[in-house]
Image (cartoon, rainbow, N blue to C red; front, top):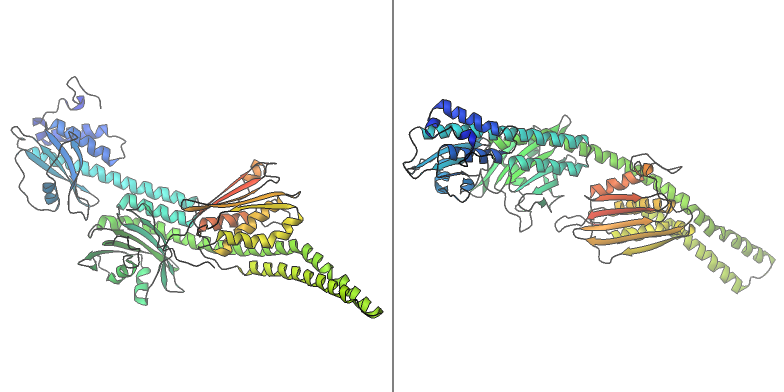
Length: 576
């Protein structure tokens, strides 16, 4: 901030303590200070600027802003002038609780409001002679202006967050990414200090399923994803009306402060009893019913550590987010249905492609049987059979039939792996299954497999059948990219909370223009391709919360890297 010869801000050099005692001069001071904040969007900047300027103009020895956050017992200092100054925090807390404590001589205070409730106190202290008559009124005017500015910025922030999430919806993010964008936006606005969660309603089973939960104090996603709670008919009726319900846990029991009689809903979704032992208890909760014209979609919940954290301001914010959350759930359902259809189409195509690929091997195996049988019949017609020759021919027939049986058996096992889940899945087992299925076609093209899969890999968040589908598509693509033979490298290793999977070939590679198109549905470089293979792969990986990267250069082969999150304790599920 520029200063005058005496180090004070020149814009306030002509505003003395006495001049601040009239309404005109207070408004002039506010106008000058706010002019310096033109274009500011950060409430902290407003608070710092006004604290510093007010302390200087009113010639205070010390000044501070202290706040009492909702649900907290003690006030906390926010900013001070000078930086090491302190104020009476018990006085601040008492004033914000609407008590009437005595104000010490030489101290004036004014209340700041934010998020629809008393939030902070602006405190000025002056030892010598104290402040003249009229100073408390002047400070109250200033505090009102500061409160208006901060609340206006909070409102703008709400619009910005909503606009950003609208943009994410338009960009067609994967559903789970969109869920967490919404929960993060709520954290920026409502400041929940426990958790926020999205639940999807399953009308066939009458349950709510937890599909996303952000734990605030850990700054990480929940380990309880997939948890379900059953709703009876009475509670099901609460999901369809779009209302936001507010609850507090008082004296160990949930009570509702909104007038809807929905206390049982809080008791049902309260995660304290079902959670890991280190999960803190929620003691305040907002539950928003999400729905569309066709009926209920699910529920959005916010939780805080202390009772009475949420009131009308937070309830209004959640109401503003219910439409976004409903759109996210609707989109998730649509995407899931499309992915299901896409996976079914791709699976049928994969089986047809597999059948074409093994036809040569089956013909070879069975092609040796017919001449042997014909020769045996001829030998039988011409005279006695030689036992040694007969035994050798039968052995060759048995071997050919065993080869054929093995080919069909592997195809059937692959075809039966149709159940879908988000894990846990075994990468090593999925690779072995697909390697056995594709072994003959890889050998026929003189493609060698170099596998480097670490022992004891943790389970990943992907269903076993989906892992096999992923390997089948990626290995099949690599095989087709090496018509003259080559080496296929398969690697998997644990890395932090992920498993890194690598599939690399030294085949023909792809030009940049092809690489930019390959993940677009129905784009294919193959004569009989559906163009759904890589789209399917990316959907499978995204469903488990992972990511997939494809690198390729024409003539230098292709490298696919996949990162899958590992299954955490409490995720549940079973390898299908």
